[in-house]
Length: 236
Ligand SMILES: O=C(O)COP(=O)(O)O
Ligand SMILES: [Mg+2]
Image (cartoon, rainbow, N blue to C red; front, side, top):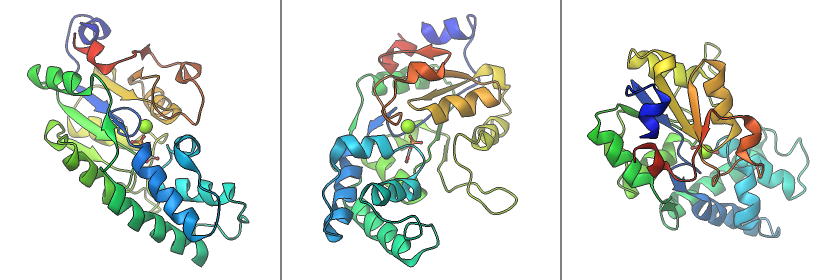
């Protein structure tokens, strides 16, 4: 079993998963909401492919990227501008409606989670997705019960009140501390450079999947410790 090979015959103390692009092919739901926002602005639709390049840094940045692509000026899409905030809400309402509708779990995900559950390995999610959407998505896919902890892109804040998102490793450390695990005995599973960078920053082994969203670039370039075509391989 790959999981035991990684930890020299032992089981890890904790496995942390990214969500979008790792467990769930969520871009169809997100693209519908992006396109609804763009339609309201009389701009061309972005579609699934473009939207998939913009995913990875959370909804606020995704909306900013979509508006920038639609040729809006930087000052219009500043996080504090009224126009940007209005469009963020337009997107969010559209995504409230589409979230969980068209997305699918990737092959091997349920086998992997069931296998890890049978081994009693504690599992957590660390996603840059906002809380507003994450819990609905996990419930609609019947995934929530696998995870002891779910940290979203707006769950934690730093001392200055700024939200903590990957590649900042603080969310990973928060979960590791909660489980009183040793970083060297923990695995981070993800699809993007942000997952790999966050894990590497704190000495956590990383396992990547090649099928998700990494801003259109192959994840191999970011040097994950392991790469598997399907998560089922972890527990087979
Ligand atoms: O919402 C995003 O942009 C990315 O979410 P993820 O961290 O689960 O991949
Ligand atoms: Mg991801």
